[in-house]
Image 1 (tube, rainbow, N blue to C red):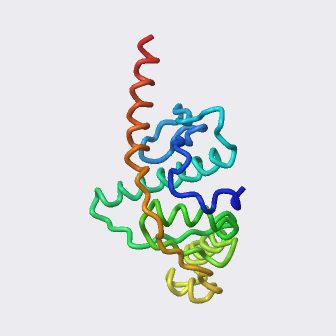
Image 2: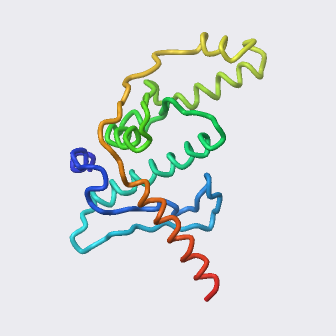
Length: 175
């Protein structure tokens, strides 16, 4: 499906999704929220839905980054690790563009496990500091740096959809 969507412009399909099918754990912190997709027609293609959900996860990440900025903590670049970022260049391109940041993909598919091992080695006394443990355990760092290329204007629509969704939840409780 990535081949079908990699040349699409941001928001080209007109779909906007909220990927809360299992609630929202960040920023909104409500496990009862449900997902939705706006803009479906009989002509909507399955790859457009896929891209809308990729964009939704990136918009959710942007909301988290906005929280950091609201607390005066700047995010200059984003590091992505694990199997999905390493295997899905289209998704990482969407993230780089939505976040409007440099995105660095870790070379290892097991970076989260290596991070846990580093913290365990420090807390277990095998190394005196995180930097010492990193120096001892690091391997090849990054495979690629993804630069933003396309302008995403969909964030304002995503935020409007969130507000509409919240209003509908209030109405649902009143009925």
